[in-house]
Image 1 (cartoon, rainbow, N blue to C red):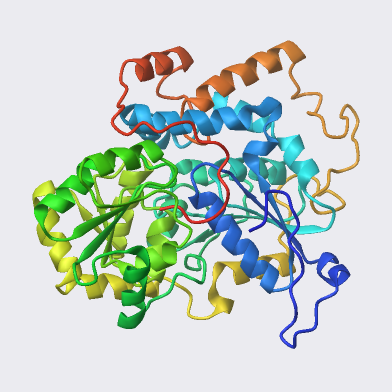
Image 2: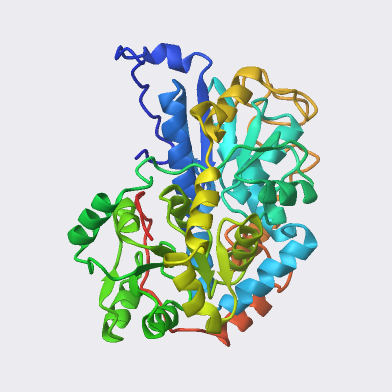
Length: 481
């Protein structure tokens, strides 16, 4: 998998002859900006990059957190992680508050503004389109596009089924959605050009036959004949995972198989609870999905899409606050997954998914989400936007895609316009406040429900330490949960 900011090699043509690197670089360059917050945003970026590279484009990938000044990206990542683990109720308040407000507040905007020049400098000459798979990146790119500093068209690939207003940024030319439900939510939030092109997942996620299922169970040491419920909780292993595993086991509908991601402490607690099949970080998630009969998830992100591609029915249960709840509702509305709201329904729904008519119906709906041919998918749509180009929504287009315009009176290259640039002390104070708010809030960082001190007080007095994980460093790409 490519690393952030690293150019992917040009692929071979269909006849096996390598494509000259100069041919790919000449007018066929696309940048993808993601963020290492969880694994879903990076996973979507990796698969889009793989497909675009196969189509002959040169792809540059960048992590927005690496482009924030003064190492603030790590603070954002760690603050978001700690809130999900230790104060999920506070995360729900912030998520709902910013949803009602239509996006982030002034602190978030100030912090994102500090990344604009760095993002612009990171884009290579000749970049013909820029794709965001993360709300904060969409905000930065949209502002650059709207102000005329970025001439290349900007697309946002919506990784979730529910669309928080932070996803929709003025200046973004095209929003790509996986289904009509998120497309309608994006339009309601103000997106003008929304195109439904289906989700993207690694091609290893595909349906399997009975023989392949038996081999997968043997490879993982799983019971050959028992119904298996695969429980996932994201790459960080957040949420009431232990409670869910015990409930699935005790209801008798299926044997729980739990993937904890990087949360080794959670895995140890599950084993102490008597849960027999517990895994940490799993590289062969396609094989584990082939072994299972149903997926039980709590966030509705990339893993749900991978399950759809594998022909595995999906249930949302005891979902994490914020995007976990809204994704569960959107997937249920789309008919792609079932949302189990009442614990008393757990056994009945799981049996219906494994043995009854609900499972085949959800499998059919999930598989139908994906484009029938590569030309109908989101990567092909990105290529078409790249080739067609789009009119500049801002004031003055820059002479080269991905580059700044010539200096204007009162403005230095790579600096704030004179009318907008605050004095250095005030800028430093603004960034400090923004960092405190953003690192303690949602991945894009917002503080409309609490101010910085109120949020810190709330977190300090409402910790939920049931599944607290040790420190997680920067995660390598791969499969998780």
